[in-house]
Each structure stands twice: as structure tokens, then as C-alpha cells.
Length: 130
Image (tube, rainbow, N blue to C red):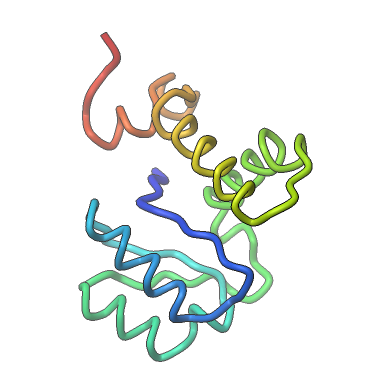
């Protein structure tokens, strides 16, 4: 089951930005396993040490193996098709607002067949809609 605990957007691929995003997410939720691709920000010592310091298991896709992370690939396909490709954005702030709205919808209102037509939030928190 894929439940995302946070996200952030940046025009760079710096590890420090990713570490800060992870720390912010961990203020609100717990994470046992973190899966990434082999981007330089995710193979850096600082990133790996941050995960280890929070007792988070590291799961890394094989090089060029999108199927290793099929759930997150499916999420990004949905994000792109349902939100990004439908609009023209002029600023990073507009993209950030659109993604904020989409992730709220995705986690709290979008029903998922794989979750027996519950939302990810309902599955994660063990609650059902009235």
C-alpha cells in the first residue's frame, strides 16, 4: 500500500532540499520504509544518514527499473494526467498550489479500487466515510 506522507517542489535536485522535505513530513507522520530511485540526491551520504537516524529502512530501485516502484510511478502518472497536463502554469507557485489541491483530493476524496473504494486516508487511519 502506498501512502505518501509529504511532498515538496524544487527546481533543483539537491539532497538538502529533500532532507528538509523529509523532516517536515516526519513532523506529521511516521515512515518505516522510504523508496526512491537512484537520483544523486537519494544516494548522497547526508540523505542516507538522515533516513538511518530516523530508523527508516532504505529501499532503492534498480537502475532504470521503473517496475521496482510501480506504485509511485502510478501515482505520478495520475498526477500528470489528472492535473499537470491539463493546465498551463506560469510560476512554480502555481504548480505548488495545483499539487497541494491535487494531493488533498487524492488522499482524502479520490476513491481507489485497490483499496476497495476507500480513500488512502481512510485506509491509513482506519476510518470509513459516514
